[in-house]
Length: 277
Image 1 (cartoon, one colour):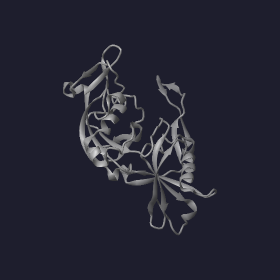
Image 2: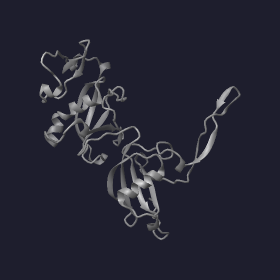
Image 3: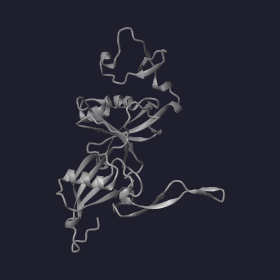
């Protein structure tokens, strides 16, 4: 790999797009380039990653691409540049499918096969993103450039068909709220639900193979802060709060990237139907 050097002539900026003209890689006449072999990296300096591809963003269509070795001090953007020229991906989607780094989404793939968090900050290193050796990552090509902050989630919302007891009209959404009521507002917007109708939500819990009803009136014991010392030890005070008062990142919702939220209209679920999610 060729590296551009910094002011101290240290090779710190890799040229990752091998097919890109040097001018577009910000290389000018007279610049010093240093060639370093990935084989020279010690085991402590590199990561072996298993790369996968998804078209829909759902784990059901995950497809293995290949394994790569990469310096753990490379940034997320460096990784995206490597991915843009990845032979197995180019063969799968074509040369022109990826328009820029911002059109690439890279996220974790857990050992259970489900997708995890989306990596957001492009200038942070893989080490800073806490990417571990032998991790599996999933690549998704986006139609529009994506910029996510730490308060935004990428979720799926699906309508509950109480007749067939299945979920339909699954849609990917970007959500930036903090309460269960904000999830309901987003669901109303996405599915164009009329005002005044009762919206009920459930979250899919894949490792338990079940749906958890998001009851706004569920009582939750949380730390109240403060407290006093008892027997020489600090005892945290507790208080009871309702789920609707808590941030969706907290228990009992524990919202994260990739969660599937089921949407049901309360008026459709009569006693005769008895839909239990």
